[in-house]
Length: 215
Image (cartoon, rainbow, N blue to C red):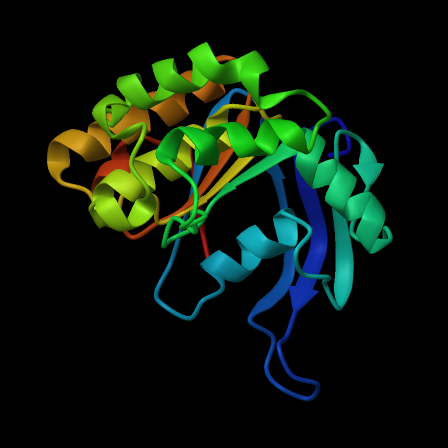
């Protein structure tokens, strides 16, 4: 499994010592060029698994490998560098900087890889346009709907062309048309070689995914 872009082996996690394991002995390879949907009842660990894959949580047991390298046991500084260079995240509630415009929010991740934000200005605007929020480029999150903010968050996740994109219920605040717009963008990223992993309850996401992992 080490040849996969992202894989976990015997992964286990519990939130409290002595508490039940929310994830237990999970082994799975997440393939590049594919959209994998993580599904299951609420409380089964879908979001937790995304945080483990994104190196924001550390498993009690098991291994997380990224691009053939074990990464779950790295120091926080090394995890941060890996996230900046290789991993993007779409959170369930967008998590945009309320003091910045939509365009500034999209450009922000580029700063963490050592490039000036102006280097991706045109591409950032094009992403916003493709997701139907181009006219909101100069607006702050408080001046947008929840669905618009979520599409800005998707654009922000795509701007670095990550090797891995993790999305937590990215279609939850969207109508049918915009759900498809977001899924088109995520599918295009997968088509370019990205490993896309989506935690979801959305039947449309499940229908459009290449693989389904049930927890």
